[in-house]
Image: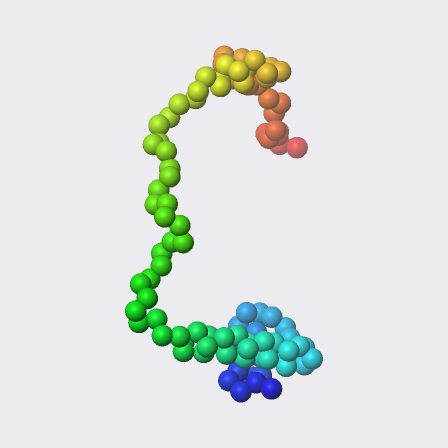
Length: 101
C-alpha cells in the first residue's frame, strides 16, 4: 500500500479536481500516484551536474520562410471553379437569418 501518498491526500486532490472517487477506486489511484511519486524520486537520484540542458533534440533552429504576402495567382483559378461570382467575389447563400421570426 501507499507510503508517501495517503488516501486522504488522494481524496482531497480528487475533490479539488471535482472528481468523485468511489471507495473501490481510492486505493487504486492512491497506489498509482504513489508509483508516480516513486518515479520522480528515482529521477531525482540521477546526477545531472555535468549535463548541459537540452532545449531541442534536433539541430534545426528555424526553417520558416520569409513572411511575404502573395496569392500565387490562385484567386483567378478559384473564381473559375466557383458556381456564382460577382465583382471578383464568390457569392454564397445567406447563412444568417436576420428576420425577426
